[in-house]
Image 1 (spheres, helix red, strand yellow):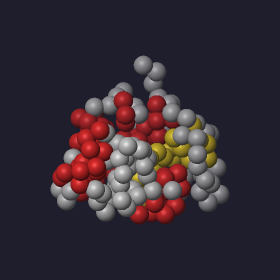
Image 2 (cartoon, helix red, strand yellow):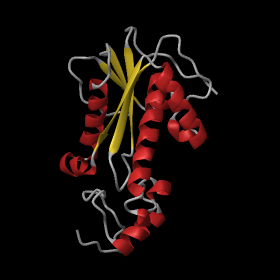
Image 3 (spheres, one colour):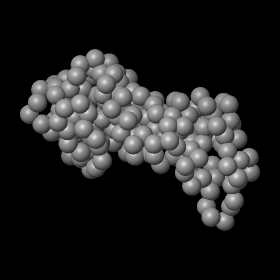
Image 4 (tube, one colour):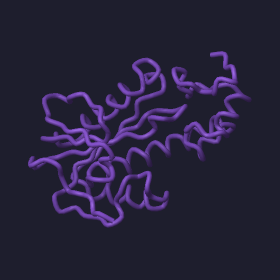
Length: 201
């Protein structure tokens, strides 16, 4: 496997950012921002989607203890419905960058959409979480923090089985929406059910 790169730019303080939960039907979109030290290395760090739960949790501890600084922020389903999922994803990334203890000199972003943050230069990188260590680290934090959040709200609404599906549009999740209707955590601006079902919002 090709090893992930340390940095994209020539700036000394480069931050990677990524989000999780963009395609979910319920819950927040969560973003993380991470600045790694120049000598950081890890053989298993990769895009969070490529890793087991065990490795994601192990890496979260490593990133939290070995990063120069990190931050994680949620943007709620209410705000997603208000400003749309793309804007909410970018807002979550901006909020996480804003919470960093050190302001980055350059930002690398997973994906192809971003809005400038302050006057800091940035670069969007498609599949960046499989190319750069700091974006992969951010993907790990965003995913694990969001999964934890969904497991907490599962206790309130166990019928949707969010501890398992994390709010993604699985058949089971959609069947539960058809049977029980929606919760306060569902994104009302999303197509929650296929066309053959009718849902009164």
